[in-house]
Image (cartoon, rainbow, N blue to C red; front, side, top):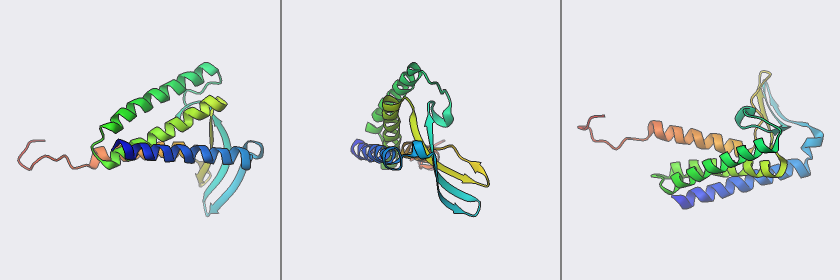
Length: 165
C-alpha cells in the first residue's frame, strides 16, 4: 500500500507545484490580482491571488521567518507520521487518502520555504459568500482527510454477528 500512496503523493506534489508555477509565472496572478473564470447563476469560480502565512483558513498566521519555519517543521513532522501510517495502511483507500494529504503538505512546505507563505489562488463562491481561497495541495489535503473520515466511519468492522460490539 505504501507504493500506491507514494505515487499519489508525487502526483499531487507535481500538480500543485505546476499549478502554482503557472499562476505565478505565466498568468502573473500576483500582479493581476483577480481573474473571473466562471459564473453560473449565484455560483462562481475565480482566480484570486492570496498569500497565506498561516495554516488552514489563515490560522496561526505570522510574517516572521520563525513562524514560517515552525509551521513548515510541523507540517513535515505530520507528513512523516502519515508516511509511517501509509506504510501500515490496511486498504487502498487509506493509502491513497494519506498520499493526498502528504503530497499536499509537502507542496505547501515548499511554498513556505520559497516564498515565506503559501500561494493560494482558487476562489469558489456562491450567493456572495466566498469559501477560503485554496490551491491544489489544499484540495488534496481536504479530500484526503474526508476519505480517511469516511473510511473510519463506514468501513465494515469485520466482526461476526455473534460478537459483541
